[in-house]
Image 1: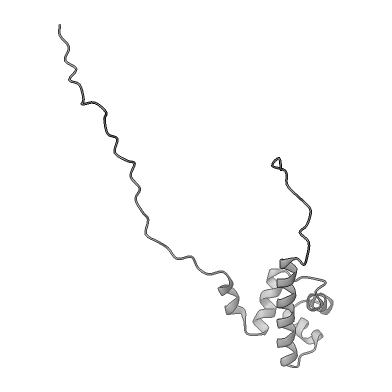
Image 2: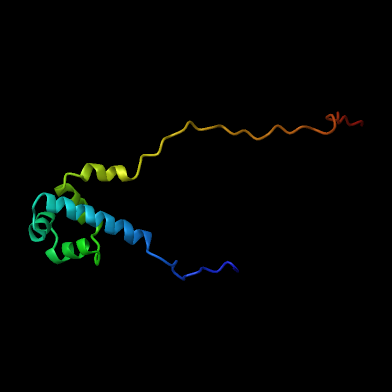
Length: 113
């Protein structure tokens, strides 16, 4: 392929869009479970109703700060940090270079004068 970047999008639905849509559906379900209208929920989250409505309908996105506020309203803010697990630390392995073996014994370099 000559090392060129192929900018043609893959056929089918975008996995990022699917993940955002799934999150929006869950947030909407939680909002409806609490019997909050979109306008009240958006006001509590500190965003416009139109922005929140677009997020729920899948035509818009929220920035990270607004998403955290939305999750806080739903009592999910602490779980948000668990999305990316903390890496486990392994002990550092000391890697020594291999010992070089001589093909011939070391010569005694005596100089005669």
